Image (tube, rainbow, N blue to C red):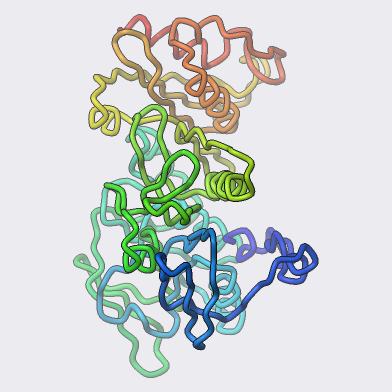
Length: 398
């Protein structure tokens, strides 16, 4: 949706995967503008706000997630937005165009915040990011996060570190005023992007078990603690194969796999969703930023003793490389050589992380990475790939 707001995607219809009419052609009844008030699991009924009651044999809960709010005065003022749905995106884009906004404040430093920085700057809008911590996307290595901050500032984005919001004010026709513990900032629009939380209210009220993360607990078939009820998407947990535990990891590709798994099992086609290794990525201007597996803190919490190494290389052969063209790769492993995770930043970050995700999925060890058969040609890199180099350096450190 940030790419729609930034006019990279101009037609919002391209963001709709399947319209209600298409569902109906498949024999699926779609009830729009209908709110579920209660789940009667024992009675096999769904109670809607209008008084309608729908019986069920099997039920899928796919209530998604809700944006976290800072809990400060003024967070519901006109001109203060959160971005979770296509409707939110329409409202934000309409506000930018109608008010001819010149300055925006974004609260938070996660994926959505970073993508919105690029979208807003592409429209010529001044951007200030307020971040409670020192670094954006703070699960990344500090060296990589520092590069993100430098890039933001080079693109005209003001990034305020270690800053907390106190309140948002608006007086008459004046712009919004964001009051922080380090001063005040005026803006035409404010975006709240501090994260999300699973929407579990209905499931909790029905007595369905929650996992340790606070999301709905499921098994490998997406079944909940109630035999007739399944859950999929950002409202439920997923199994992390490296952490060897159930976690909350809300991403669109995971939700799709969970939904297919639940549907297959309800349709008498036994299917298991084997979990994730935690691959994810985002783009910030010209940089790709990606990660998979565990970072050091997560590894320690999972009972490992992580050791890491960072190396850098051009995205093409050194003979073809231009100044400033480089990709950074961080590998994290156990002293015995078990790969635990990887992070990358640069023009080739996603390709490196996709390869390392497959390595994590299949259990390839660090010594095997040093000789992994990867495609080579000077326009794509040197004979020794950055993955080979980093793995070899980490092995020496171990």
